[in-house]
Amino acid sequence: MTIQRRTVIAAIAAAGLPLPLFAQGKLVLGFSQVGAESEWRTANTESIKASAKDAGIELKFSDAQQKQENQIKAIRSFIAQKVDVIAFSPVVESGWGTVLREAKAANIPVILSDRAVNEKDDSLWVSFMGSDFVEEGRKAGRWLVEKSKGTTGDVNIVELQGTVGSAPAIDRKKGFEEIIKADPRFKIIRSQTGDFTRAKGKEVMEAFLKAEGKKINVLYAHNDDMAIGAIQAIEEAGMKPAKDITIISIDGVKGAFEAMIAGKLNVSVECSPLLGPQLMQAAKDLKAGKALPKRIVTQEGIFPMEVAAKEFPSRKY
Image (cartoon, rainbow, N blue to C red):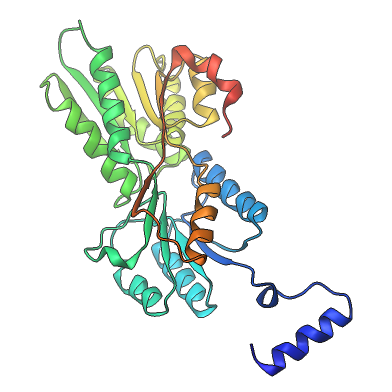
């Protein structure tokens, strides 16, 4: 610490004022969030902010508004501010090599939260914590295969994908297709991005209904918000969601449970957004010089509509 800083600290202490962060040795975490595109993301942000406060960590939070260029700017700002740890949920998988190398050169450890990146050099981040998106897609596929047992004829599926190029969109599609490809009856007849938003989910489902109408047997939505938007489109088209069209989605937010209780959504695969406590502990461990596991997987379940009313009171998001 410089003589000038010591003089400042002494003066502040003599005046009985709280010490600045650099004097307290407070851990500083820079976090770049994707945006606020869904109930899930809002809950994720709230978890991170509340957990940082509880842990006594100074959080520098940046909302990228679903734009990669905003996240890259935020990470460079965190590097310039010399934060202790950087964490972010990448908007898309690719295009992070340069800025991650800059963080590594500055000796600032990076944690990937919720979403992975597609970079060959995995030394550019210390840990990736979050859900197994491929397994979530598999869970959705297994549920559909089980539900379709004893039925005959083709099962025509429309798919609402997440943001193009994002890890959950890529992996949830991959896992689902891995399961259904074993039976040629299952056919994805339309697949388009709904950007993980309710409004876009409704818009794309309207287009699917105009193109395919009553040929559609199943909707597979990569998140609950898109499914809820699609439910509105199905109802406006004079059809009954969860009856005329089986609806499968992912996240397990309260809105999905409400839709299941109302008999409008068949099943939601859980993807927990409550990563805040886990992230703060990881940041503290890094500051203390401890090694982190390269992959930290969140434990999650699957909730069909039959259990929604019972499970709803205990839901935290």
